[in-house]
Amino acid sequence: MRALGLATVLLGLMTMIGPALAVETEADWLKKPSAEDLLAVWPTQAMKAGIGGRAQIACKISTQGALFDCIVESETPAGAGFGAAAIALTPQFLMKPATRDGKPVVSGASIPINFVAPRTATGSHIPGQGLYAPLTREVLSDVSWRQAPTYAQVAAVYPLKAREAQVGGRVTLVCKFKEDGKIGRCDALQEEPKRHGFAAAAKTLVGEFRGPAAMSDGKSTVGVMTQIPFTFAVEMLDPERRLIGKPRWTALPKGEDMMAGYPNAAIQAGVRQARVIIACDVASGGRLSGCAPEKEEPAGLGFAASALALANAFEVSRWTAEGLPTVGGRIRVPIRYDLP
Image (cartoon, rainbow, N blue to C red; front, side):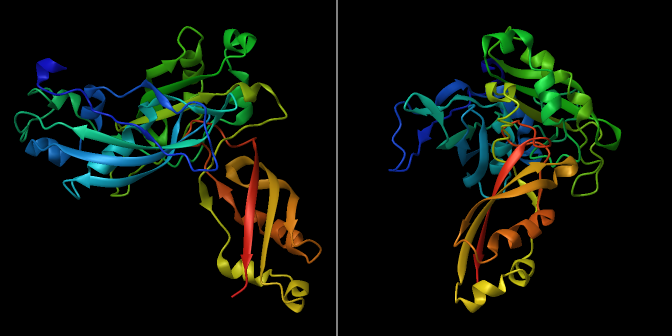
């Protein structure tokens, strides 16, 4: 990459652990994106103008070493798109999770990323010409999948060698969108650990994904690149665990629905706050089913029944930012009531 006059991406990691969460070891890097990876997500207009930039993002690190819940803390120059570009890189990060009492725990990190400016503007270069044009391409990140592999499908392709050795793994595929939101032409950007069959297993699931057929500006997604993280967690081998990580809610109950279901017994008793946790299966389409109350505070005033009545209003993403399926998994849903 030095031949192109681009500095290797500079990444710093500052682990942020709250005082209640003492760790034995902090999260650390296993793999960082390369300069070529930065070019793949470089904001188009900035590349044409020969502009570099810097972004700082804050993310959580899962117990499998994947980044999720990332937000842009700052970007320079403002509004040039480098913050969004940094977020688009996150599926390529591979980390060793923090540990506490010898077990992996969720932690946080603030990550600065430098996009070192090209030595010259690319101007109106078209693909196939110039130094940078062949490497720049449109990448769609944070995809809301209309369809994704189910928990059972992912568990079924868990590589035999890794299954026998009780080894987990992570893969990131880079794919192109085809018609109707389908994807294809996938290559493995990363696989850890290697020689266990994780990349091959991930590729067998490609046909199960359906994304958007058009982007927010109405432009077709055909030919657009996307990166898909996969996490093969050892917990998936236990049918009772059904690990799905942290899902993203795509639909939630409205405030007026919660207030309409506020139990009369609680109102008469002057109770203005309550908390309920329900455990549910994630059914087809990301809807919840088979819900049962796990916790109700205060108990006996009807909050659990009210929470169960709200379950149909919830919907989760079919695939998490950590690279885990949700459909077929089981999820705990905390619901808080606050009476104005």
